[in-house]
Every structure is written in C-alpha cells, then in structure tokens.
Image 1 (cartoon, rainbow, N blue to C red):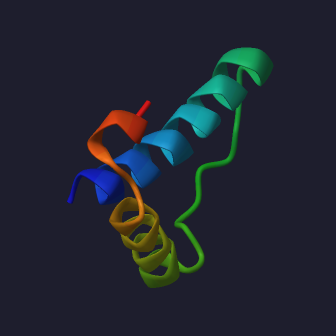
Image 2: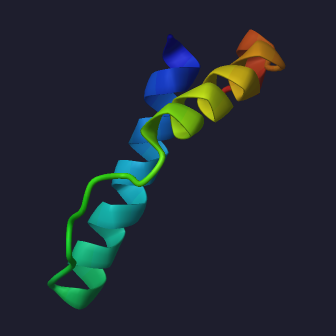
Length: 53
C-alpha cells in the first residue's frame, strides 16, 4: 500500500514542479493507471523498510 502511494506521490511531485517552474501545466488523466499501480506495487515488493526515501 505504501509503495502504491509513493508512486503517485512521485508523479504528483513531478507535476507540481512543472506548475511551479512554468506557472502552468495541462493536467490529464494518467493513460495507464492500472499498469502504473502494478509497477508501484512490484517496486515495493523488492524494497526493504530502510530503502524508502
């Protein structure tokens, strides 16, 4: 669950930086939400608690 949230947090942070830098960004729905979620979960399965940064 945590790695799922981490994945979306990283994605949101990237978008937020674009908004701050450019003052404007087009927000759109993620094209492959399930694949993104699955990737985040797979990433988390290989992490140890001290790896999360």
